[in-house]
Image (spheres, rainbow, N blue to C red):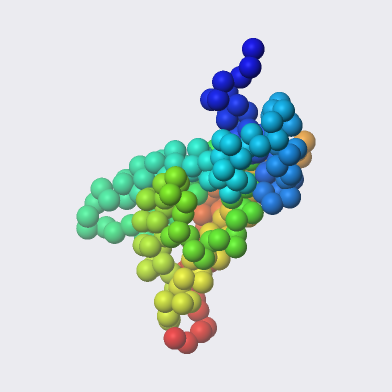
Length: 211
């Protein structure tokens, strides 16, 4: 019996996710994704997603939207005391914890490896695909940019982008280790706490640059 459209789309999405993580977003051949998903029609991916970018956006939305909802719940917890504004550590923790949580799942590990490949897009983090909800990510980053150390907005923004790149590359590297026979040097809670410490340090370390 032929697969219906929903099953075909899911198979293509899963195979694209796997190959984007393992081979590379731009290196994985579309034809290979279609064949590995069990499709004879060479244009199946184009039919369901429009393009390579279309299936990438679908992957980012499928994983990223629940992550942003989790992030929102953590950020909301920092609003409990109106007399104590959220500090950089609590906001960075709200960014990190939803990402480390998905490292328990093979698909989550593939997702963080895909996101790390998009580092050239991080300076334009405000411009997410329309299907990807970054409401709470944007809220956290806007607040962190204000809290970053630096004599000018340009320096503070550069630190913010550096923090995002470091976070995603670290998560991707840990995903690779978790998928291998190698035992990570740090256990999960220690890794998460240390990553938060490092990222806060990137944002708040003293700056020697003038405005």
